Length: 467
Ligand code: ARG
Image (cartoon, rainbow, N blue to C red; front, side):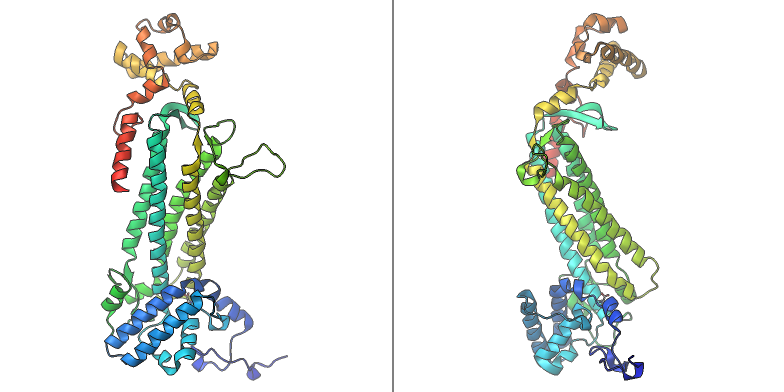
């Protein structure tokens, strides 16, 4: 058995000064993040170039060393991009992998790069840059999804379908109006994304380990070089919070919830029983045993991915909730949650955009369904209020009796003979048949934000102007 004192493993070349021996294999395994944080290589190198440039500008390192550092970092960038970089788990993370390679490439000047910074502000910077870019991408993707819905809404501003509450037929609406409901949801998601970008648009670099630094650095210069609005104001907060990542995950969870509801509707609508939409071959799959089947797998997977995103949000909230200020290694676990959620969200938005653009809408099926289930009962009640002067509660009661009668005869409201209607209320005239059709019903709902085609077109115009 090996004796502790004769451990021959070497200590870490980056921080091992006070260590006599290297880590246990399990220590190395639990500690290393390179397996996932190598995704941050571009942000890490960009941050280091900005930092070195600032150090030279401030006279903290020489221009000559800065040039060597920048050149070396650019070499490393192309090595990683072309797959010619060997990542080492012994070097723990992306920061130390890059720095160690820099030392091999340029020698002692590499050791000057880490002046006036720590991995704590370095990782806060890299991760913020990554999340900011992901938010910008999400914003663009949501804009694409909204555009897809606007096109379908325009095409179907007049197409009638049943509107549901409790998944029971409630009142007729237009398919355009239903599409525009999703435009509102994804529009709010996009607004949340924009707000989050504003929140995190502050540069962490220069907060150092937690207390700032005694070197005469210029944090405004690095903030500007890295495209941030300004530097963060408190060094302790800078290295110890991950609320920007949690905000990304919350936005992803809310958008995911919207996408999942849409997915659920597509699953329902594409059943032969509903038959409201038909998915394109490009966004459905067959069954290996039942040749007749066309399955909405992509929609189902969007619904499931939302569960993963929610899991990531809860995981990171839980990781963070007990941590004293400032940095603790627990925070290293933030990245995989965000990377996984980002991948799921991107896929979900892309798949839904494709499905919405491609699906065939069966307006005949929608219209037939819109007329069933006594969907124009409210229109009859409203007619009694308007034309016969009944209080709405009484009109509701009269209409209820008409629905019961139609139900017992197995016909629609519009199929009841006038004599039957007049037996329920003497003031009913044949004019009532004008409001009992689904087209008349939707056309009458002209209140602001209502389902009338004219209102749907107003909503479309509003969103076209800001999309
Ligand atoms: N890999 C670490 C992380 O992701 C970098 C920061 C390490 N800082 C430290 N004090 N050990 O959080």
